[in-house]
Image (cartoon, rainbow, N blue to C red; front, top):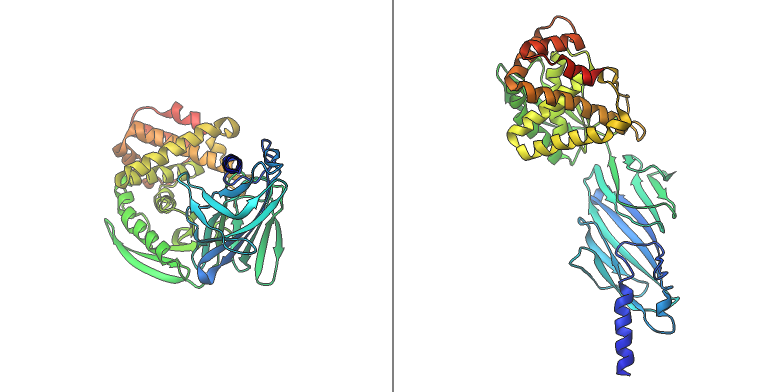
Length: 427
């Protein structure tokens, strides 16, 4: 009897290793099957996304037949930011623990013998804000059915598009049918526009004091403060490095926006009308948009000049405050340019951007942004900041729009001949 018991324990331990964390595909080795039904429900008033998962585990492992072994637990990954985790079956709660490798081990309330199934449930919450919900749906395998319920007054965009949409009176339900492959998390960006609250401050620049006004949705005070801090810190840095005092005569308004309002872009600068910032955008995007006050003043008539210089001066400004962050951003941009060059190579002189980004255009647009940065960064490395300032002042004084020929002429007047180098990028 003692030997029999020992044999069962050993086989149980071996079998449980076949139930891989987060895996719900049929295993060739053990024929276990897991079906998972998941529902994500956004509850703005509680500032959470409540996640419910039904997990149906079927033991078809032939090595466990004839009572030779059983499964007694299940390994599963949960997001690091999951809280209020609970688990239960139809009769009682399940005990669980987090393993040292990061996944959770859920202990069944009974042994699951050969050709038996066991159904249990997981629930947890993800934190969101009252009017913005940005989170990942973390699923894996191809036996998973996923639904996402979000109030209908939220503007919602998902990183994948293979869903069906059911519109109800008060909510929209995004459904991913079983059989679709889940190889990693799916990012959800959702926002509800409300009446704007206002945060105001001023920043002292070289020739004047400039007012800064942040328009933000209810509950987004942290976002507003980050935008204000970024603006007041980096405007003076941009001013010094451009070699040109703040070049416009109006104050700055920054408005929080959803992805529909920005056309899929991280932000855009409308001059005196202000800057529209996507609610998920980083302060790097805001620095880029602030730099456009100078790019517009420099009379550039080519998109690559406008965007390339905005990204270059984002790098220059960051390099003075957080050099490691600036370096990582630079490396990421240059590596992306090199990795996409074969597929999307296009002369910068032919570059244009669509009014709205989508999954079909995003990568190509991203490439041209990175190519424009590669050119302007190369010039900066060769010329140095003082020569760049000199050429910037020449751009500013120009009575005509700065086209490629004038750009090359002014750059050459600031240093040695860069005509061929520039033309390799733009033609």
